[in-house]
Length: 357
Image 1: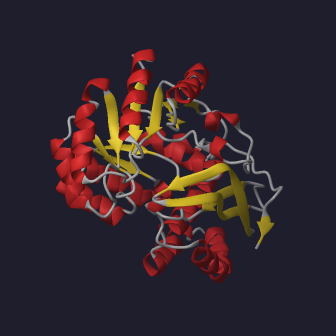
Image 2: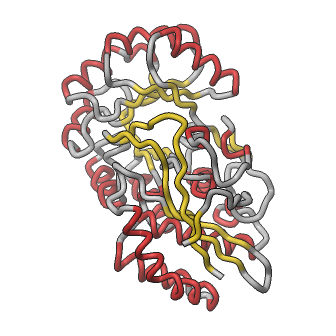
């Protein structure tokens, strides 16, 4: 039996994303219960405001209209064919990712394997996550850095883009205090092309791992210009908002790295193929969540373990941004994610706070 549940979870504090301020996360949890085996499989459909082109209401309508047909397809083993059809008709990446997560979770559980092992027999048994460091005054930023490093984070992502002189001072102090940690910065589209080149040249000596999205997401030519001129590696984040644009970024080599948000990309196969394209152009990928619940994050962690670069921290430890979650597994929110030997996604769903459609 297939059931649909909506969630509405506040953030601990308002979250700035792609020029928008969002105060909560909402989405739809798919639950399929196999009456013969007792297996319960999960998926999550959660368009991200400011990134996804489809809306929560649009994916909800499609799921309600197709729920019976999808359930029948899962029962008779034609779930992937139905997914391909829905993907071709609607082209809603979050919908495709959520349904595919459900299908793969079910297949892994029927095989009695963790999802990561089912997908990638040679997966990394552990993967690093970065800690996120809001940049304010020097003492506050260093205090937060103390907390994150004491928890075990060895890569910190620092938000910049508001006051470069202050940011330069804080970053310098951060690097002086922590000479061995990796520091990556996220400019959130704040700079012009000239500003980006100037600012990045100024901080070259601070050994910055890379800078995310220095210019506006639509300015692909400008992003390429910064990439070619910057002494620091450039990562496309907001620009890399779907597989079509990612293909353009890859083929024009507009960035050194691509931030992959699987919820924006569609089916697992879409993710695999797009990753292969980036590899052929020698462009590295870093996987990150779209601030989903534990269901989406567990799927992304599994994909990261199979496709991500082991030496590079991935953007996975975002569960703490939510006031509460739909599962309580702590392994998902640690600085180093070590996969438990639990079949499928490796989580147990809590139904408190969920509303059945």
